[in-house]
Image (tube, each protein chain N blue to C red):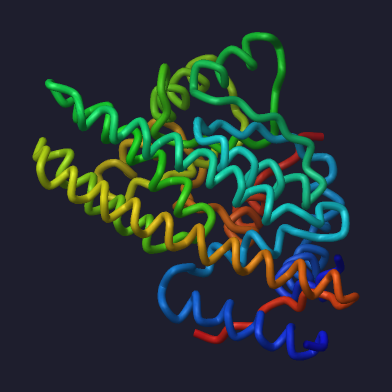
Length: 149
Length: 154
């Protein structure tokens, strides 16, 4: 079953190719960690990242995100949900920053009050996007990811 | 019915779901993630949504039936359902969840039960509509046609 060309995706990829450095080339070397307790969101975010050629791993809460870093792994980008059991996104972000993790952490939250958003940002976020994530929102996050070296 | 007519019928049906507010733009986002390498992505995600939602609705009903209602637990379930419905574009389910959460905060059992009925109603409506949509798509493919991407101007 073939779908006709996705105008939005084409448009995004074209704009992505135009930016310096070529984001599409860059995105194939970026690694990402998806932190979300909702299995549906995990599937969608995983696919969004896969689509852009970004190698990614998925965990279900803030503690698992911290643990995966303790095991020695590192990521260029972390997509952090806010409301999660065991350890929420605010605590996890604070913990990762305390550990010296300098990855780009983008808060992805369904929360909408300014106070909650501010608290999340102050925990150490580099970016904040409202859920649900879309290709466009992800592209704006990716433009902020800098590769070392 | 020939393929062109089927495609028109599908396009009209899909547009009606947006006009009635049953689906929102997030559903289009899901469709845009589907391609030749992942041709069943939308059906897979929506199936996950159905499984998740039915479990959550059962858990909520059970919690509301308890002698001592745990509103914190119910709120957590409704939050999950709100997140899932939002991610697939099930707008009316999401809105019903928002209303539900307000009553959870007030610890109002009677209103919460009414909200649960409302959420269930919206959920079964969107489930029915999406199953019909997928059946229409399958009919087109079975007849040798392709499913066109919907262009919507809001």
